[in-house]
Length: 447
Image 1 (cartoon, rainbow, N blue to C red):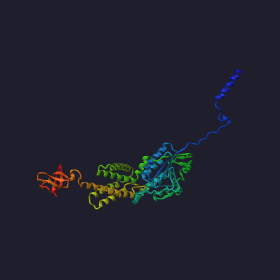
Image 2: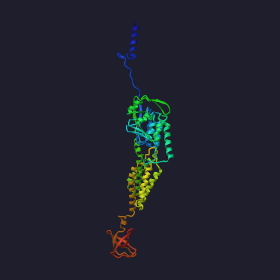
Image 3: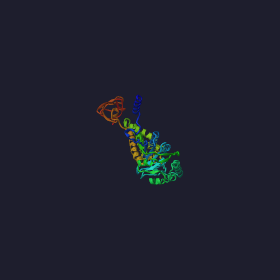
């Protein structure tokens, strides 16, 4: 009996210590918790405006950051008229070698991916466009100041063959219609979003970013290296990656128009400081502007001929101030500077360069200021000092004590008596003119 009681107590203790089976508490089984999969990280970049080295740096860093953080997708929204060939190739190289799939999306409505933008669009794993957008017009141009120039047939063929071969090298592996794509280069043909989709230049048309990501969810795409990847974008976590403050500042400086303005402001400021020492402000502004212009010169493809023409123009402005040419030297300087500005930045893809309006609007004031400053310097050399003893030169006074051949006398000039000497005798009361001043002695001659 005592043994049975011990067993009953032990069983009761074990029942209290052991956990209740799942669903036994409360006499009802609770439903199992269901959770969806983790959110897919989507890194969004934006190419808005001309494609230049700073823009390429921004895109390259964004792609590298996305790959380093394990992003599921990189989305590049683009609206560009084109840009520099070297920057375009840099961006395409990073798109092709990216670990994460890259989608290039022409948006919003009214946007374009022209010229270099067309090359970038076709390099993506997925090429998409919004309604009301267009792409193409990718014929390479040799241009001066944004205006195309005529080249001989051999050079033209060389440029076209290089561009089409580059496009074929990656567009075919992306499954694009290479033959149709080449017409954008050889014939400068452009395509609406519907024409591009029907012609197999792009993969899809989407009204918005949300619709684009929704349509890409579950889609299997072929990567550049031949691998297949299935996109899982049921819960996309879009992370916007914008330009840094430094890049936003530099992207303005490397615009050809701004570079030309900074160059002239820098030269003009230093010129004003050297010709009029002590002004300080022109020297400081000129030095800062010139350093910024030198940075842009390092980034932009500068044409040495254009730079030499600008230097020649400055020399002609200075000569105009020194010699009487009836405006011939000044006009030649204006012509040399405008032509130099238009030739200053080379851009074989889009012809991006200093615009004619900026070239004229900046050159004319610069010419006037340079010539005016130099003439002031030259005139100042002939000015008579207005203070001190030197200010008495050419002044007229009266002899108060006779001046002998070898004995000095006294003259009354500017309300003061001065010791005076002359190579010949001058009697009292004669009006004399001061010829020069040596120490406290005035050398005079009769009026």
